[in-house]
Length: 221
Image 1 (tube, rainbow, N blue to C red):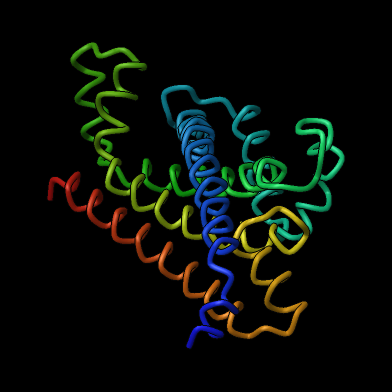
Image 2 (spheres, helix red, strand yellow):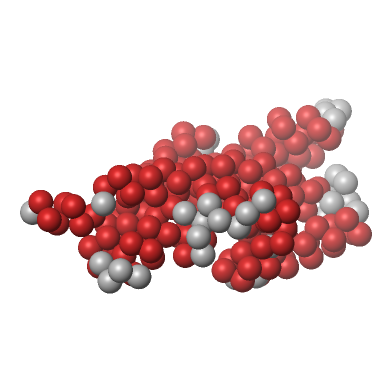
């Protein structure tokens, strides 16, 4: 039993878990902000919306579609020069952040756009008829009305980001993916690989539980 516990390398497991939580937390926060802005712009500049602008909508839509379509592992490689310029290295938890954010923000932006489209247009029209400004409509109508869907969307995105951190770990970004690959796979230690997988699953379950809780709390139905 003692040999089994020593095999797991608890200190490295804890360090890897902290790195995964760090990468996920920072990237989720940045993804939420950037994705919300992009999603709002996609919705507001669409045909028939308050800020209808075909050119801006098309540009943002193309950018979102392109980065949303690139497989994450390829995106990491493509962004190596940008990451080195921004962070100074391609190794470590901080080096994974640009790829994580750029990979997840467009995905979340589409979820935001879908959530906003589901809002009853009558609510928006009623606000406009009362002389409410566009910016007031955004933060007093659009965001509150779509909040449950926005939280549900960021929950799904956060879970995807946990998986992305595992992939980033394989090329040296740290975290549980790096721990499972370096200490488990490369050293033919299936116990470590299994433990790292369980740790990732626990993180996913926690994120899902928190997301479901706040989605239900904000749902007015």
